Structure formats: structure tokens, C-alpha cells
Image (tube, rainbow, N blue to C red; front, side):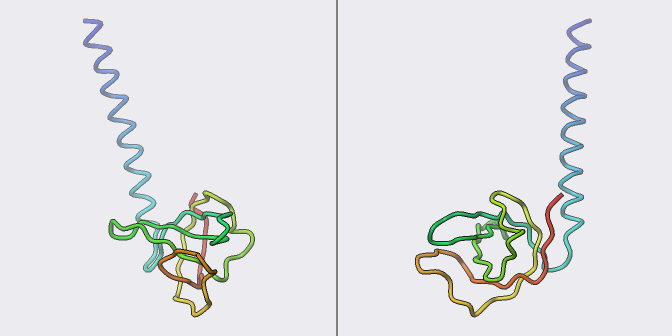
Length: 109
């Protein structure tokens, strides 16, 4: 009887943890506005001083934000942003998909 009770407790704990983590994902997806992306800021690479990496439609994308504010240059921080393509040149040796101008930014909570 004790074994069954402990298995029920383990199952209940796993079910609750799964529910809580899935709800957090749902809230994040619902909080995105049209054209917003979630990305991770990467700082310190010598060729690309700052890169924002994202996952879009199952593909990794890397953006060089030409106009990023110093307050956003926090390595590993998640950011929600919108952008437009920029005509600014990307640094030599900086391998990114696109140079962008950030239009809006906010930290992921």
C-alpha cells in the first residue's frame, strides 16, 4: 500500500510540474505582439560585438543590431524585440543573417 501511495505522489508531482511549465510557455507565447521575436543577446565576440540569436520556424537566425543600446548589451539575457532591416554595414568577419535596426525592445521576465 505504501508503494502505491508514493507512486501516486510522484505521478502527481510530475503532472503538476508539467502543467506549470507548459503554462509558463503559453503565457510567453500569448504575450508576444505581432512581429515580435524572442532572442538571446550574445556579447563579446571579437568579430560581432553584439548578436541577437533567435529560433524562427525551426531555424536558428543571428542578427547584428546596429543600434543596440548599451543597457541591452547583457550576455545571455533574453529580449523581446521588433526590427527593420538596416543598411548599416556589418563588422568584417561577422557571420550573421542580417544587420537590423531595433524598433522596440523589452526584457523577457
